[in-house]
Length: 512
Image 1 (tube, rainbow, N blue to C red):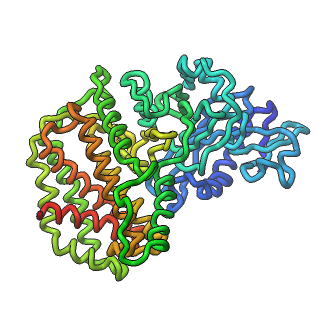
Image 2 (cartoon, rainbow, N blue to C red; image 1 turned 180 degrees about the vertical axis):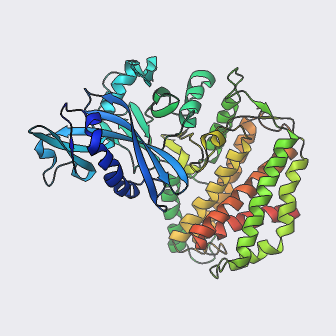
């Protein structure tokens, strides 16, 4: 398709008759092939483009795509960039795979591409943030800390693009473009700004600025944190040789040397527990901002938590009764079905608690993948919350123990993931290599909880008495594992043993 842009502007190219065909013919074909598009399994009914703002003398346009997907309306950010010159259309052109249409300005031709892959656009966005530029409904807000940064270096994309695109400038700045856009505060930006400017929490990337169109956040800038990757990748990479070494080098029956000793990053438990406790204290910082001021944990809230968990558990039980599971995990499902009443009773019991504590904002999607390994420390990132939830749900106040449960479940998944990759028996825990992995799981969970308890003392958003804290944590662990079991049943039935085992272990501890 060729679009006319007689003034050289991207916005003109997508206007008029050509733009209507671009909406109806090109975009519905292109969107399902994008990793960040959430409606791949449903038909696209219609696509409507809304220009939001121009950059670089109009060669770049930020566009909102309102997409009808099934019976839903989804909105996405699509930056469009005009690259003039016929060399952009020749075979082998660097941006050819990201080209959406040809563009024409009299005798001049070029390519209209997904601007996320045009290295000029991130620089223009950064300049607009530094200048606090405002253009109609578009506004760019940068902090003094951002303006003090000179030339940050060349932009480069980080990792595979999913729900957002992260672009690094040297080792100074991370610019995030939020592909899925929703009206209202973006928790990732809102929480980072609070932690930076109000709570003074140091172990998260510093907030530097944001770009918004009316109430919709389109992009945000954060300080770059030099790191060795995320904790999930680092731990799995370190556990695999630990397991292989025990399987191949130790004779049968030999004692495990230094069974509870693990070096960084495997020995991350105490450090991560401390940083998590400090995060939760920071999120309970006294403030007049209603979005972050703590609220009382009421009996009504406890009742809602219990009702939601019971409903999810009953749905899981009904599915397990009909499921045909792999032979290795079927006994776990039968054991859970035999203990269904004990499970439901445990979940209902949380409604009877009377902990005198507050609710606060939390991370909301806390696991090892949300933690960066930073030299001999960690940084906690990505406060967007669970992507499947609405912005309002992700901004709700809750108990920090929900985050603690998420991290403990992540330890389980890391251990079982390694066992599965190496051919270890994740069902029985047999084998010398698996013994080492299991020793790590117990050690890291113990160290994490001990450090969290020690450094969270006096936090207003946690129960003061150990008994209430334990009951509430076990409840969130059960609820999280129930959610995981439902997910695995739909997507990876062979993995359902991990959450089922977690549920059964909690029920067994309760019986003791």
